[in-house]
Image 1 (cartoon, helix red, strand yellow):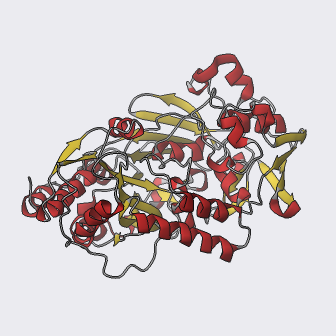
Image 2: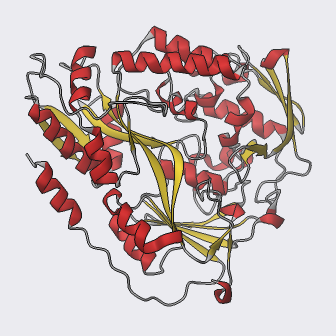
Image 3: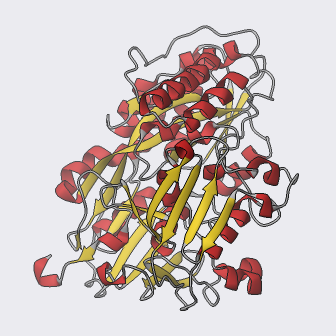
Length: 505
């Protein structure tokens, strides 16, 4: 077992270097991130990098404004009736796909059905949980045509909901309609470069295992406002390598630097190192179906033993906030680092993790647990292997995290754990939690919605359903070439950026 002294020495050994390069290509934004999307099909993609790419290639029914709020997207306006049980979205006039084919209300309806139909996608209710008959369609009890969505004419769509949902326009920022005319012809191959048609600010130019290229879409409804002609998105899995390449001038944007280098980079890069308040949670996913992890008191013992302050201070240069809660909140005396071993933990626990920061966190946690008499084995795998193991239930503990991106409302942090959410894969069912989440989603009154979310969070905490560790900030490196960024919003909407000419950099 590695102790903290060894762990910190290994972390500090990572070197930082920069070297000269030739100038960047004109009109090309070069972006480095951890991984490429697992799929460019919004019905099938699950990686955070997929959500990032979707914001460039696809167009939402509503959109993110530059400040992260809700703005018109494909829909230029919307309204509701019956206290929020019926919503009407009105499309812009003259919308087309990137191949010139008209984009109409029928495409919107067909896309909603495809997302919920289990025979067509990795179907989840997701943001369509409140649509009439959505649960029955997902369970194959009714056909997709029974969904409460219909085209009133070529430019108007009606959504019929089982309960009021004041957040629907906000949720529709990440509903990306599909080109039915292409998918019905080529099926799942529609995302290949030779077939792909989209409606966003950029279109897919080319794809490989390490690169994704995009070019400006002249058919985009706001094409005249898109300043950058082309983008290259590269997968650079190693965080230290991303830093070196950025400092060498090979990239204009790079995210997620090594946590143990944040202080150094802030000092060396100055204004080119940006930190943002962000809805990022790092936590331990606990398999409730695996003995001895079923009892809440066992999970509470493990949680109490973790020294979160140590992890935040040593691995994140103090930029992460230790927490035992999902929603960011004042959490006094959260450090932990004490506790008593329970006789119920009578075998080594396996911690699944990925290389890098998560591996270092796993080592520190294993060291904490050893202090209370609990042994832990660490299994380091690639992210895809870890995700598959978790989905299959083949894990004890997994170091996990998610970044809700531009969804800045802190209550969105709970949604992944709701029944049917993307993080609801740790074999825990709790009627009280499910009821509180359902009430929160129904509420149109902000105060009542906040109360329901707080009650849901309290239930997560009481049961130690998961083990929250840190609320993190998002960190980006931004070169002097890039203009149009904001101090309060991560640079994830590349249609709103521009590149300075060399003489102004």
